[in-house]
Length: 108
Image (tube, rainbow, N blue to C red; front, side):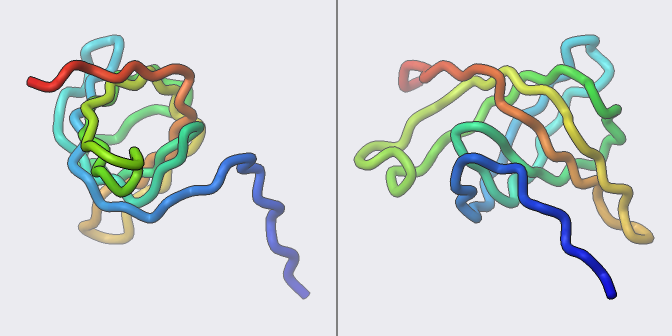
């Protein structure tokens, strides 16, 4: 008999596929990834690079109007990687990150 892990999320995750620019604080990674889902407290994304658990990231993305209740918004997030899923064969790495803080950026 298998037991399911309890979901530790305190905020609702929204399934949304968005391009996300990732930059590691240590400079080891700088690329564009694809989100799978996000909330105000976390994000899950797919990336080509293997990122270490505990790594600190800067994420830049555009939130669509459906998620901001009106206008699309550029945001910059400071995040910490809490889990990394290894790719199945030739796939991308799955990265779960906690959003520590975020800032709404002015429209470019």
